[in-house]
Length: 389
Image (cartoon, rainbow, N blue to C red):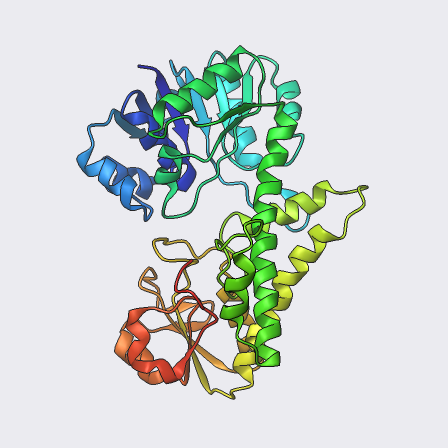
């Protein structure tokens, strides 16, 4: 049983903590007192069904603290899963939270193997290794879905470790032994390649979203059946029938910032596709807003801000971009979002009663069709064709 510390208890951090807490002694560190309070009561601060089950029903070796020294001293592995939001001014991730952790570890526990799970720019690990030569710093990207983060850790598509030495092998074995899937591919590579894997993977996913959204826009304006076309296109095995349901655009925590970070890393490298993916997402939100505005509504109801079913995250959700465009045209916007406790959201009224929400809205905008809205189908605006994320 190893002693493992996880820094940050968001989707990435908490799913990693639960992954290892069955076989190892895990301590989670966070600066958010409310998150720590909830976790001490074995309540999950994020929406993830399997994480909730592990906390309540699984026999786990798990502790959570606000104290750095308690978390770091004696730890063999320290997993950093702090947020790295994209800074529009610098065109790079804000990696200050990671750098602070590394600085603390340099003083408190320089013997631990440090595993960065936060998404970072290409070249960041090498830069930090030079800055903190006493630390053993390894980047290992995560490939997790919000709401199914622990499932994706238990049954990973692959394990990528940015280190080809014995330490990298050790980390690969650590993750492989904790998951429930047999024969998981473990790929050891240099740190910069591992960093690029994460950014290129998410940018490809963003490109796929953008592609089917532009196909859908074409069909909507030309009067074609987008569902029939997408189904036929997807049956080509080189394309596939997955990840093809039109939406209001890609959003969430990862895709918007990762695509922009990859584009920033393309400085001095010829490209046109990466910037087109980012622009396509803006164009799609423009198109969706125009389609709604054309119906001349007085009040538009936004049903849910979250990115998808099973998630409680609405950070950078595409529907917020649509809201801004509607409000810029003077259209009243109301919001139904059970995860909100506030009475307003960016100056839009939050209506907590679903029946009242349906009555007030002339048009109800929803990224995904749900049973709750079947009684007001004549009001619903969605581009959901397949009833799936």
